[in-house]
Image (tube, rainbow, N blue to C red):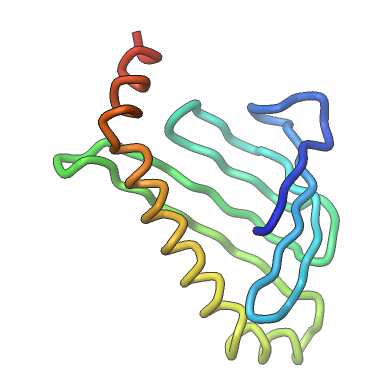
Amino acid sequence: MRKAEYSSSKKKGVGTIAHVWGEAGGVKCELDVETTDWTEYSRLAWRSVAGTLTGFGSITLLPSQDGTTATFVMDYDLPYCLLGKVVDKLRVYKALEKGFTLSLEKLKVTLESEENKNKLEVRKL
């Protein structure tokens, strides 16, 4: 994902819609995604509702003995039938996997920083 902008008046929670621009493995995409599940600080799930890519996904953050366990799940279809499946296997899937792994690692470091731990503890009260 390169950029996302809210296209609904709602900015968080179920029903929020965002317009997303992205690129993976040289394949550009642009789509609208709708939030389908939302638990503040722990879960976000979405599905595409329009655009060049169809799919759904979620990210779940759970406390663990070692800090935080982050789980990312995504299923998608490229709009190119057989050619799309070949491009996906050769380039897109690997690029998405690498990008999401790096993003989750950065998110983990950010969430587990002392500054953010203190903020999250205050918000839980």
